[in-house]
Image 1 (cartoon, rainbow, N blue to C red):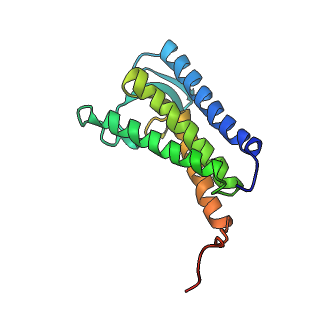
Image 2: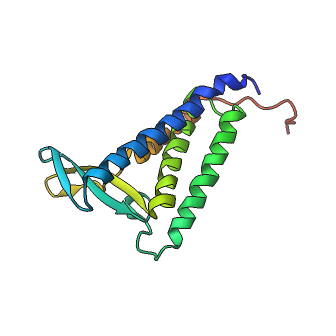
Image 3: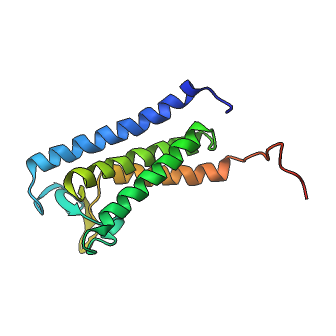
Length: 168
């Protein structure tokens, strides 16, 4: 490990902040909205709404009868553990650690929903004329931005071969 554990603390704190922001925002929406209700914020562009998603992104596998809840729960936990381990072992550059932390926070935020509600709570709805982007939440936003950071890190962070790697 090239850096000390305290140097990694901000990344794990970012994951925690993502979880807290996600859950607080969902709690507020659940408190004030009924399913399908919409509040126009920016005319012809953005509404707050309450939608339940038992599937994954874009309601993928939403109509599969319930097994997908456990599949996505397990997948999120495995990916989060892998990314946490990679942060801990300094396997990413700064952008990668940032992205991994954001993905962990977003994934765990949605895991909490699946455990408590049996589905993910979505509430951000962007649209224009007859085009609607599927409703999403703060956790999804952290996951998407985190993925961009990981790609950026892959382009910028060059790994050096380890000493035990033999040239062929």
